[in-house]
Image (tube, rainbow, N blue to C red; front, side, top):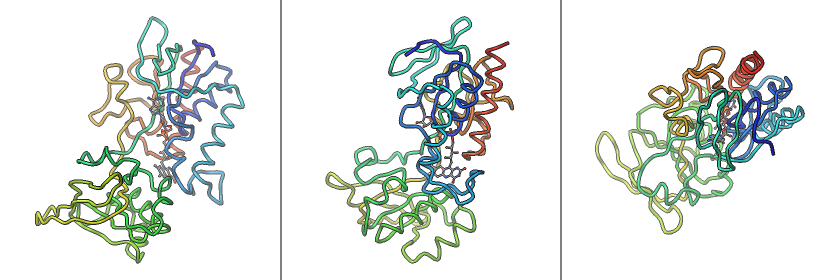
Length: 305
Ligand SMILES: Cc1cc2nc3c(=O)[nH]c(=O)nc-3n(C[C@H](O)[C@H](O)[C@H](O)COP(=O)(O)OP(=O)(O)OC[C@H]3O[C@@H](n4cnc5c(N)ncnc54)[C@H](O)[C@@H]3O)c2cc1C
C-alpha cells in the first residue's frame, strides 16, 4: 500500500464515499480511511425513503454498500483503520492512523457523528449486554422482552416504533413532558399499543448480573424514585461530532463541529470538512453526499492549482 496520496478522506459514510467517488473519478490518487465499516450511520437505517433515485426506498446498509461499490470503481483505495490525529507539514498533511502514518496534499474530513451516551453508572459495564445505541442493529435480540427507549426526538421515536416488532413492551423515557419528534411519528407512537411513556423521567442507574435486568428511575418534577425490570435499554439522545482527534488542529465550535465555508474549506488550506461533522449540516444522507462532492471539487482545485 502506498503511503502518499493527493487526497486522503477520513470516514466512509455518505460524505466520505461521495468525496471518494469524485476525487478518484477526477484521477486524483485517493485513500479513504474508515474505522468501522463503510456506510457510516446510514448503514443503521432499516429503510431510507428520502434518498433520490430509489422510489421504492432502500435499506441503509445496501445504500452504503452501493456507494462504496461505485466509489471504488474509480480506484479509490480504502483502509480499515482509525485516524488518531493530523499533523501539518510544509505542503503536506500527515494523517496518523492505527495502521501507520499517511501523507496527502489535501484532506477531506468526513468522520460524521456518534450517539451521545447517558453518562450514568452501569452504562459502560452493560454496553452490548442489554444497552444499545442502534435499535435497527440490536432489536432482534429482544424478542418478547421488555425494553426502554431513552429520548424524545425523531431517532428515538422511529426506533421505538421499530422495537415494537420484536419487544413485548417498549417504554419511552423522556426528560420532558412532550416529544420533539415530528407530528407524524408522534401520532404513530401514541396509537401503538406496545408503547408506553414515562414523562419527566431520567434513568439514574442500570443494574443486573452480567446483563441488564433493571433500571433505577427518578421523576424530575416529584423526585419520586422507581425501579423498572427491563432486558434492554436503547439510547437515542442526540449526536456528538467525531472530532476528538482534531482538537488543537482545527478550530471547532462549542459543540465540537468543524467550521467550514460553502466550499467546505476549513481554516487550514487543503483541509476540508463534509457531512454531519460540519457546523450547520442538515444531517441527512443526501446533504452529506452533497457536501462530500463539493469538498472533493474544491480539493481537486487545491491539489492541481
Ligand atoms: C438509525 C439512523 C437512521 C437514519 N435514517 C436516515 C434517513 O432515512 N435518511 C437520511 O437522509 N438520513 C438518515 N440518517 C442520517 C444519516 O445517516 C447521516 O446524516 C449520514 O450518514 C451522515 O453522513 P456522514 O458521511 O457525514 O457521516 P457518518 O455517516 O457518521 O459517517 C462517518 C464515518 O466516519 C467514520 N469515522 C469516525 N471517526 C473516524 C476516525 N477517527 N477514523 C476513521 N473513521 C472514522 C465512522 O465510523 C463513520 O463510518 C439516519 C441516521 C441513523 C443513525
